[in-house]
Length: 462
Image (cartoon, rainbow, N blue to C red; front, side, top):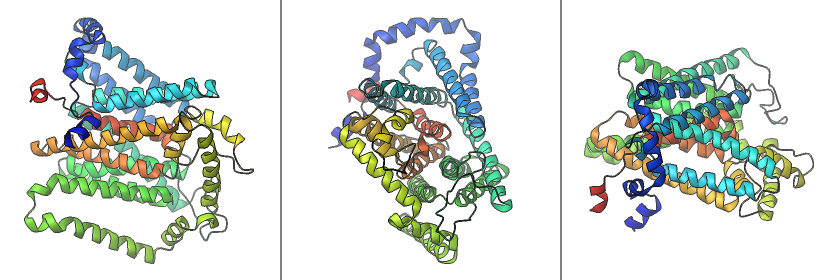
């Protein structure tokens, strides 16, 4: 059983054998001689790549999606440049996660070929490819602890600005750009903050990663002032997310906290006295549950929003999603294997043929349904396999870091918690596909991949 699981998660991948017989490896090894004569790439190549990633993270909440696309294209071009200049050791940097990402992209490409709206699907495939450029560049560059620290710090500082502005909107009021609340609800006129992102659900999705990594910063950063800053980030991010009134965001942040606490317990388990090994988790989660119950019983806004989750069609937002989902199921029934092709443009061209009158939608309002619609069962199976491999690889590398008492492990915990939160949020919304969120998704996946330590030949031969 253990061997089968290791094969399923590619844990025993013998990369060194592939490299020794790969024609691509030989071509890249020949090209890598150029690096020896390039002072800029050889000495500053990774720093420049990290700077590109930081610029993307810093500008993400404030600029147009077109500019984000340009930055992603630059990241892809630079990744191609440094890949050609890599040495033999760097050429072994592909991980099991990389192979599953490649499979996922391959399914998307196949779905594009068989799409009924090929031109629209090709646009979606290009967008997916741009995001994957960020993944491969970040997974390569963030292997450096110093560059990983700087990239995450840059994101957290920008997220703090976003959160503070969102809190200001709650305190001073802000124009609601759309009908985000049920007109018949007690909260019909309630303010939902959106900060610089223009939509409260999008802001909530953005803050999930910020919350996860600011929790990590509490443990990874050294010194009183850095820890105080991390604590301020945690408080501001949580408060701003609460003020979004995003029910999906609230559920997702519970997943973030649950995952983070569970992995933190795993990190410290062996250092705890016997009593706390047994009772720490029940005490912590019990106290957390009690706090939520008290908050639910005393905060009217929380009561109304939580109850609306279970209101079915009586809540206008729920009713809208249910009608969209019914149309989406009909789309899946007609093209179950490879879907209609990737991207929102393909969805927008096909969905009107199935929608109920008056329920125009730009997406399936569920990441998982969206993937099935766009890439069929082949796509969702590849995506779920990728999730399993990410989780397995993350836990394996966390165990290695735990044994070494390496504080970088806290960033890995944050990345896994962010991934868990985004997946939960994605069950009921598709803001995951927006550039500001999708970049953070692939950044978190890249951080997990960046910790990968390939097995040595002698380890595989045992």
